Length: 78
Image (tube, rainbow, N blue to C red; front, side):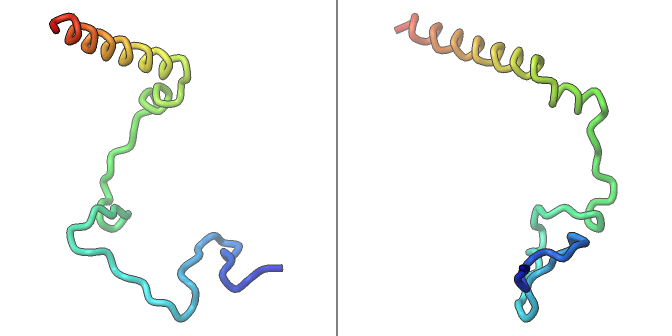
């Protein structure tokens, strides 16, 4: 059983009938195809590095090692 507020099969659900929607404020950060038709897209290599778990683990370990170095250098001065 579906309710009147369920998404239609096409996936283009809008607000329920009889409700008002507020237009985005001028200068808002909302980006759509009409407001920014030339949005840059990541390269395949960038997408690969963002989703490759071993690379993400290496970056995590490297950043944490840098933080430990900064923290311990500061504490050694005291």
